Length: 318
Image 1 (cartoon, one colour):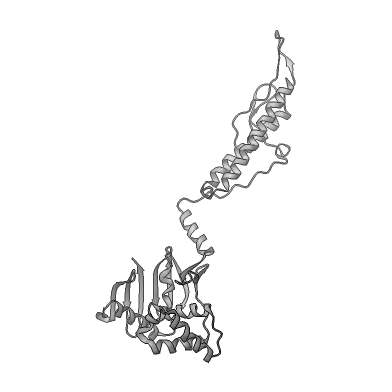
Image 2 (spheres, rainbow, N blue to C red; image 1 turned 90 degrees about the vertical axis):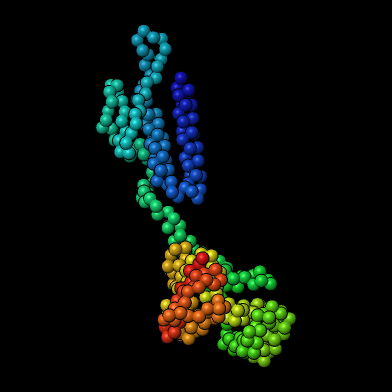
């Protein structure tokens, strides 16, 4: 009889262990974050059951034959539902004892996790956004010919960094020379690889710059960015996470998944801001209205602002 009881106790303990292992695996699942508090309560209940089983085993009532019966009956203290702090049992006299506390001996060797703070409702979406903001690094502009990333994004805290290919002063001088020479024909040059590569090779030799395929790709990017597209903010317009681009002065700010962030994009002066606004007006075949204000759709953005002495603009993704 005692061997059968030991077998049942061991089987119960093994079942509890397997259940705890299953819970641990479940907590590794991405969806478990929102259910941690519930899982903690369930795990604690299992631990209580394990401790209760151990206590029952240690406080087993001695075997004794019942009167007028040849069979031997084993009687255990009857467990009842517990709170977090008390374990109710039936004492040796068969009466319920409501004052028996969980002792250190009963919990020795058993790890009880601290209770996590209950999750506040409705905040998981925003927490996820903040987590992404602090961890993301990715490419937003790719070279069409090589399909390699040209511009990358790093987000640190509330700062958004658009990381473009490095330019030296000599590189900037070469870009100005090419832009001035070709003007509106720069788009045709940008798609003529042989002609552009030959031109860059000659200018690099003249300026004592080492020319290679990477240099060609980087210079082609800047020629297209500044002459064919929207200049310094062009990379921001390629990031699907950005819903709004704002310039009220020289610095550029954005809304990234609904979160306002500062960027490392900055114009040198008001004339540079006015220059890109004039380019947009020309592309849209529009003219500023009253008080130099403008508003039109261009390249997938609602473009609004004003030109004049203190130019500003806001681009809102459509």
